[in-house]
Length: 175
Image (cartoon, helix red, strand yellow):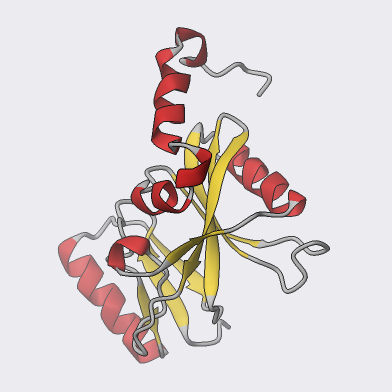
């Protein structure tokens, strides 16, 4: 009952947006699935609703705290729909709302993520409506968010300092 277009991607192992495709029809979906199964019969895949957008937001969360965020503009190629900085999307600094912060932390906690990038589609009214959680990345890239948040200091340094402290090696059960 899904409407096309849809997004098809592997639930593990996708990096930098490679392997994320937009599928325009059931015919194309069948062909993609057949090709995937030819190479890996057990590859877990995700099918997502395609939501047209101009940008999304990557929110970095570490142990229940937001470290920083970036606005990721969709790649300016007419044939692309992705917002991965590693593929050429432009990133900008953005201030997130309390709702976006709360939902990003909740998403990170829901998957037991200690250091994750939570990707969200902002609501039309960001102050009053919850964002749509796209995904929680267990291995997010840092180059884009590090660049746009330079004035706040290095996120990577903050992460390293956090985990240099042995008290932070094991997450407490209450968190």
